[in-house]
Image (cartoon, rainbow over all chains, first blue to last red; front, side, top):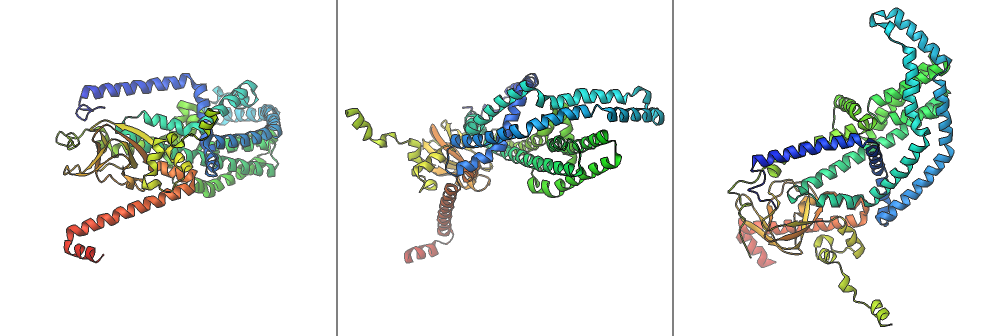
Length: 366
Length: 173
């Protein structure tokens, strides 16, 4: 046990600790970037754990043990997944392939060619001759969309994810509480309550945010799918799923999803009026989301200004890609809570009591 | 045959978990079944403190209570240095923090090498979610314990402020 006299009373020792902490952070960052695929699978497993945890808790409240409850939830999830795989995935995969071909068709080439000519003629001051929109579009379709949908169609990646992630999720659900207790048991007594409180706040923030996001994406994806189906848009299933998935990224996601749906409508039909209706339908879905769904699910969960949210999403995306954009908001909220809690209790946790304090010289007793 | 007979009628008391035996005597967990006590045990945090080590400081936000498993804890007022209580095995302190994160009204220091079992607000909240019936039992007992302490404190205050009235009431009672 470190006595109050030695704890942080030596500036050199404090400096060494700070340096070690900085080195640990840098090593952690390099480890994250080097082991990115494993980190992504771990993050995916953690996200799924947060989403499935309430179902396990419901089973536990019925009198089941944690392991039994986790097993029941997994069996149920397995049956639902098998049903989805058998019924929906083949149709979606076909639609994806068709969409890829559709985006590279005569309509698309014609549209890009006309856009190229317009830019070079009317917007010559932007250096239009150097912009090859047709080439950019081909690269976008071939490169970006291949990567976006390639994962679904790539059997090897899919099998890896489907075997590793559920395995990790099962044990995180069954033994998560034990892991947390084990981690907390390693924290020194001086910071024990503080750590426990912060872990609890993190759990609440992250769990509520991710579960809310999952439910919101399901609702928005379904609404979008129905709207596109009603309008008679081709590939409405894939587009509906895409709108639901991109909705998890604050502000930028819904915009990207809606614009992509409009682009697909324009390229596959060449009808600008129809494209406008598709845009209106996506706008209505977003209005429903912001007016009815978000307030219900999130309320004032994050306590962050919308501009702050946008900035952290951009920074998260810049450094950590899609996962960064997804997790940047709750991560920032957690860091903010951590900073506030540390500042509030700074004097107690980071400064030792004075030499006359009764805590230094407690009365001896039998 | 002797070994089978011995196994069937073995003394099950010898296999009682010491922590569960400790929890039975804590008023907060009074009335819980052995299954429920086993569930509570999953949420406890065992901590070890050296002699003179601070458990928590006065004025710091509190997050939960502690049960003394072994050793001794001194509760004292940091400002005056007065020792308010000395708690031994089976006793508990800090239970007000289970309800709200109010600043600790006193400091707690281990007098001798001590083992404590921590039970925190977040754990009580989780327990209520996992087992609402048991969570309600614990919450009711917590309310009873705090109510009794409030009554005792009022009586002691009354003795200090108006000893004559207090003595008269005690004589009537």
